[in-house]
Image (cartoon, rainbow, N blue to C red; front, side, top):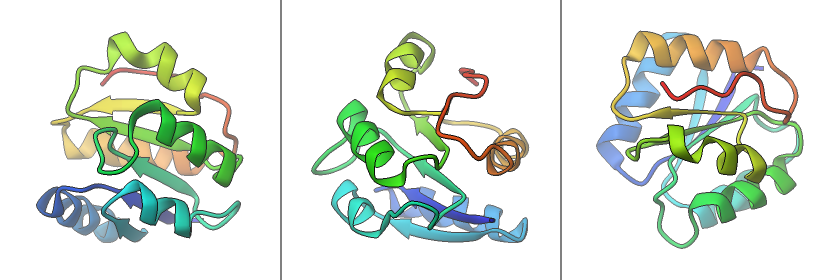
Length: 130
């Protein structure tokens, strides 16, 4: 399933990511905050969730825990403006499957998204700090 839920409050960033992924034949649903994300996420609804950490209403590990509970086995990719390497263990414990720091190179991001779309478990695959 190539359906992706993108949770990003920066509209220009979200639009750019959506365009890049749609060019790769992926269907992208964009929501601007955690409240909207938790309204739309259901088990099996999306092949991947891509989320920023610094979101309005609820963010960080609290959001990851809620997403993991709602989405069950759907892989979750965290993209953050923060340096993610020191946070990897906490992100994994909260439900992230993998993480990348922004800004990132789009070819690397697309490769990671494709890899994770093939990974159908909420269990961590190789956590990296790209």
